[in-house]
Length: 316
Image (cartoon, rainbow, N blue to C red; front, side, top):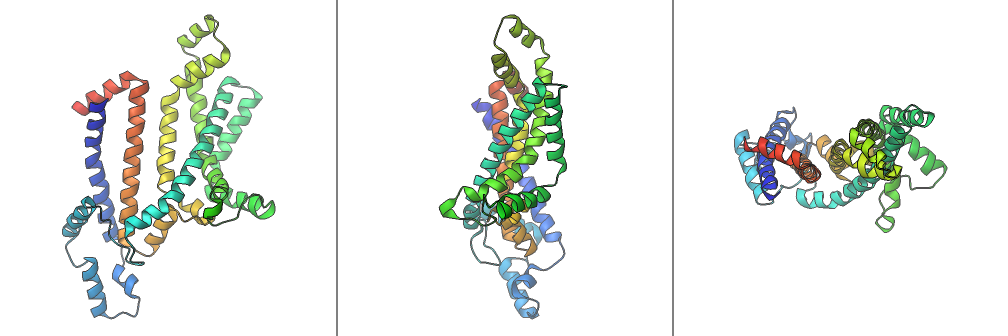
C-alpha cells in the first residue's frame, strides 16, 4: 500500500504542473490590463508602467511562470493586487467557511441519495421506486440558483426558520443549513440514480442468491453484501462532489452571502486579481488531487484486484 501511495503521489506532480501552466497562461491571454484595474481609468502611462513593473507584468511570460513556481515552493502565493493581503492568509480565512459548507452538503447528499437509491432498488417497479425516480429527475433538472432562491424565500423569508444571509460566527451552524441543502439536493438526486442502478446490478448477482439460500436476514444481505459491493461507483460520485464543494460554490455562496472560496474567486476574477485567481486554482488542483488519491486508496483497500491493476498501470 505504501508503494502504491508513493507511485500515485509521483504521478500527480505532472498533473499539478500542467494545471498551473494552463491557468497561468490563460489568465495572461485574457484581454485587459491588471495595472489599469489597480490604478484606475485616470492613471497616466508612467503610473501604469510602474505598477506593471511592480506586478512583474513587464517580464516575459515564461520568466513570470518560473518565478511563480519558485514562490510556490517557498509557500508564497503572492499578494492580492486589490487588497494587498497575502493570498495564502486570505485563502485560510475563507477555507473554513467552504469546508463547513462542503461537509454538511456532502452529509445531506450522501444520506438522502443512498437512502433513496437503496429504497428504489428494493422496490423496483413499484410506486415508491417511481417516486424516488421522480425525486432524482426533479433534483437533477432544477438549477441550483432556482432552488436556492425558492428555499431562501420559503424557509428564510416567509417561515423565518433560518437566517436569510450572512455568516455569524456565534451561531456558526444555522447559516449553513439552507446553503448545504441547496447544494446537496442536486448531488443527492444524482447519487440516488447511481446507487439504484448499482444496487440492482449487485442484487442480481449469484452471491446474493447464495446468501438468501443460507437464510441470512434481508437487512444483512442488503447492506452487508449488497451495498458494500456497490460502493465503488458511489464513492466516486461522493469524492467528485466533495472536490467541487471544497473548491467553492459560487452560486450558493453568492445567494446566501457566505464568505467562502467560490465567492472570493468570483470577486478576484471580476477585478482581474491574478495572484488570487492563481491561488484559488492551485488550491483547487491540490484538493482534487488529494481527494482522488484517497478515493484510489479506498478502492485499493476494499478491492485488492483494483490495487494490483493500478500498480501495474503505474509501473508501465
